[in-house]
Every structure is written in structure tokens, then in C-alpha cells.
Amino acid sequence: MERYEFGFSTSIDDKSSIESQYQKMEIDREIYLERARESAELTIPYLYPPAGSNQATTYPTPYQAIGARGVMNLASKLMLALFPPQAPFFRLDVDDLVYRQIQGDPQQKATIEQGLAKIEKAVMDSIERNNDRVAVYEALKHLIISGNALLKLTDDGLRVYRLDNYVVKRDPQGKILKIIIKESLSPNTLPKKLSQIIGNVVQEEQKIINLFTCIKREKNNFSVMQEVKGKIVNSAKFDLDKLPYLALRFNRIDGANYGRGHTEMYLGDLKSLEGLSRAILEGSSASAKMLLMVNPSGTTRASAIAKAPNGAIIEGSAGDVSVLQANKFGDFRVTFEAMNRIEQRLQFAFLLNASVQRQAERVTATEVQLVANELQDALGGVYGILTTEFQLPYINTKLAMLRQQKLLPELPKDIVKTKIIVGMEALGRASDRLRLLQFMSDLAGTLGAETLARHINLDDAIKKFAVANGIDTQGLIKSNEQIQQEQQQAQQQQFAQQALADPRVAIEAGKQLANSNVRPQIDGEGQVSLQGE
Image (spheres, helix red, strand yellow):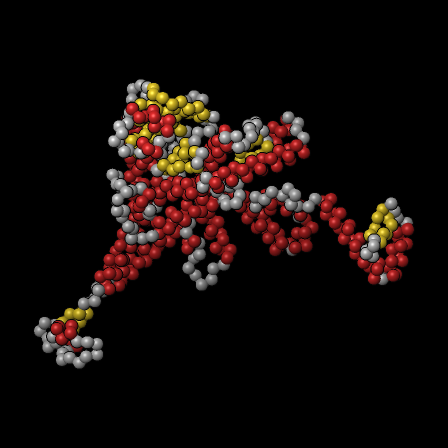
């Protein structure tokens, strides 16, 4: 899959170093990065700190929490949809057309499918051991806010790079042409072999070094080179479909090198809600301040009011004393109603549960489910791009890494295909299930259950429901032969019980059995069974 070469060589580009290429490509990234910081400031500020900040930077605190709640909620929903717990998100299928061409045995195909299921479980166990879900959840938050994130697959798990740590260049179709990553590392954390190579380049007193990694697409593979101080210190080759660097986008823009985030589309509402929330908070604080005003020309003394305990009797006139009031209740009410409408729109945008149920005295469960399904279907485009640019490349690279470690066997590419069974596929199955349920309910409601039972093929209906729910029916549903056999056994047992209860039934049954090939048999416990000769 790959080939590593350590040692000094010339730069990847004779005209410029990787560092200079990175600096040139930063110009195209700056617009997207500024937008990401603006979105993060209203949602989760620490994900994209201001330019030039460090670990001691004090991040701004938003006046509203809808943005942060929405990002966390949407990232969790996407996480559960793309990586469902306790179940594989992919399937290794045997191509039926190819298998028929080689005239394979059906029993052999079943054996192959059982072996592929074991491989799927082994891959999912590896994902759980490396805690890849934690890195994927972090990457999804970056995607929602900035629309971009970079993942690197290693033997120890996934690593996430945010947008200000890498640059990328794509062709008009969106395929990766070049990725350059900038990492600030300590020389003590580098691999021993690489540390020995760069020992002459990096001074001993230098605590931090900038390591630039360039991934460049060539005709038949990807070349990866690492540079320190203008010198290439490491190189590798990867197949086109096994690159461990995944540059992800949330929304695809034709011809653009970077994607756009989900938060950016609702930045106007977030800014409006931020301003209104701040106005409400500051106005409420001002209204909560209580000030007593005393008429300077009156008979009541201000010092007497200030010093008097509760319930005391002082000399004065009530008309001389008044309370300072803002009298802004009407204005605050308008602001509050506008803020509620914006919150409702943002709850719909980020799929928060509060947006599912409308404010009314009676809300049916069907209405809630329809709204929830409508919101979930709105993620169809997101599932599509994440399946193409994340799930398929991720699982193909993961399989290649495990095969390289001798943990998985080699699989024939022309027969075994990788298929994603969540995301868009799950949305399609859910839609089929709803239509099938509605169809069966309409028939039962208009024609009646008895008419439905006469005209509906029960076996096909069960299979369609199983497919719509994504359930493997192998060994689960009884065959027609099993059902007939169980019915015959039930009839025989019922007949035997009637024969023991009523002698006349036994005599009549004996006459019928005399003309047939079936003979009753009584075991040691007195149970009667019918056996053919």
C-alpha cells in the first residue's frame, strides 16, 4: 500500500519549498477561516480562536446558548447516523452478477458471507479500540461550524486537523490535488529515526519546529513528503483509494477548494439573537435596579428614609417619594417576541427537540413524528457528501491498514464490494417503511382486515418490512415448508387429544386410519402420535 523513505533530498518542488507553497495557498483559505471564526464566536468559541491567540487566550462568551446547543445536538445526531453504536455502518457484499459469471456454488456464497460478517465485526472492534468515534465527533463539530476538517488515519486511531492547520487544492470535480499540513511539534515527540535525521537541521535549544507535510496527487498514486527547514526528511507513496488523509466538507461548492459550514447559513439569525439577548439582559439588569427619589422641596428627608428600619414611623409625605422606573415593558415585549421567533427558526435549523412539538394544547404523536422525520430528511444532502468523501474512503483505508498488519485476509476486489448501509441508505429505507405502513393502513381502513388478508401476500410483506428496517432475515423467518410442517404437527396433536377425550372420536378416527397409510403410535408417557408406514 505504501512505501517510506527516510533521508535528505531536494524539495518536492524545485522552484519553491513546501513551506512557501503553504504560505501561497493560505491566501485562498483566509476567507473561509475568517467566516469560521465568526461562526465559532457565536457557537463554540474555542474551536476556532482568534488569529494569533494562544492557550492563555480569553475567549468571548456568547449571550445566548442556542448556537452551542445546536452544534452539539446536530453533531450528535450525525454521529449516531454515520456510526451507529453496536452495529457496523458498512457491509461487505458479494457481487451477485460477478458471482454468477464465475458459476459459484450457492452454498459457497453463504459460507463467504458468514466469513465477511466476521471481518466486519473485526473492523468494528478495531474502530472501538482506537476510539475513532471521539475523533469523528470532534471533526463533525468542525464541519458544522467551518464546513471543513482534515482526518488522518494512523495505527493508533484518528487525528483531527482544524482549518487553520492545513490548506487544500481540488480539481473542478472536487477531487484532491494537493494537501499541505502545518504542525508545530517538539523535537522530543518525533520518531527516533526522524529525530536523528533532522538533528543537523534543528538546533538543540529550539523547543518547537514546524513540520510541513505535502500530499500531492500523481497519475497512479499519492506522494507524501515531509519538510523541516526546507529539507525533505520523509516520503511515502499511497494508492489512490487508500490515502490516510481525508479532507472533509460539509457543503460542496462547485469549483471551490473548501466547503461551507451549516452554521454559516444561519449566521444572520445567530447575530440577531445575540444582539437581542444582550439587549434583553442589559435592559433587565437596568430595570432590576431600585432607586427611591425624594422631592428636594418636600418635607420628607432622604436621610430619614435611608436610615429608617422596616416598619418604622417617620415624618414626611408619601407624595415626596417615588420609585425610578424604566417603563420599557412594551419595548421589551416586542424584543422578546422577536427573539422567540428567531430561536424557533434556529431550533428547526439545528434539529433541536424543542422544534418538533408545536405550542398547542393538543399535539398528536403522529404530528410530532412527521415533523421529526421531515427534519431528519433535510440532512439527506449532508449524508450524501459524507458518505462519498468520508465513510467509503475511511473504511477502505481502514481495511487496507488492517490487511497490512496481517489482521485481515486479502479479499478479491472484483467479487467483494464495500457498501455503506447508514446515512442516505437508512433514509431511503425509512421512507420505504413509512410508505409501506401507510399503504397497509389505508387498505385495512377502507377494505377491512379480512379483505386485506385475502389479497396481501404475507411472505412478501414480511420481507419488505425487514428490508425497510435494515434487518437480515437469514434464519429469522420460517420457510413455507416449516410452516406447513408445524401446522400438520399441531393438527395431529389436536386430533390425538380429541381421541383420548372422546372414545367415539377415536373409533371414527380408527375407521379413517384403517383406509390410510397412517398408524397411531403411543409412547411410554401415553402420548399418541401418527406415523406413516
